[in-house]
Amino acid sequence: ATRRLHQLVNAGPFTLQSINRDEDRYGRKLRILTRGGQSLGELLVEEGLARYYEGGRRSWC
Image 1: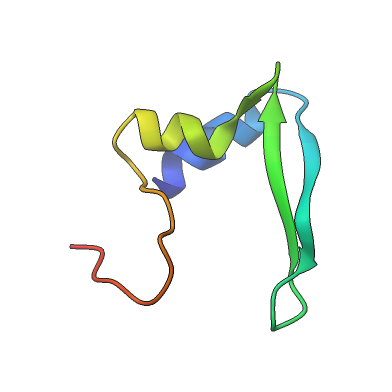
Image 2: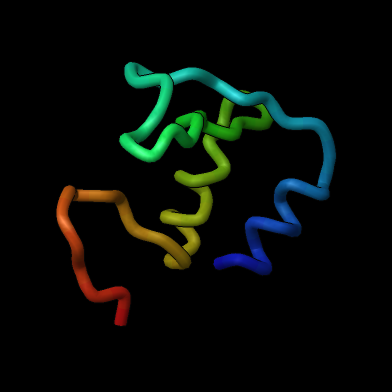
């Protein structure tokens, strides 16, 4: 997933889209990366490399 995200980000210009919260509890900015109207995160989910966050801690294996 990390390698694929690097490929997607380096493939050309993208947009940072705000969401309903500006920051998480650690002060990190929360944004959605989009290109051509498609979320790069959703693309990772569609490719089976990521999954939607459902809250709480879960195993990634």
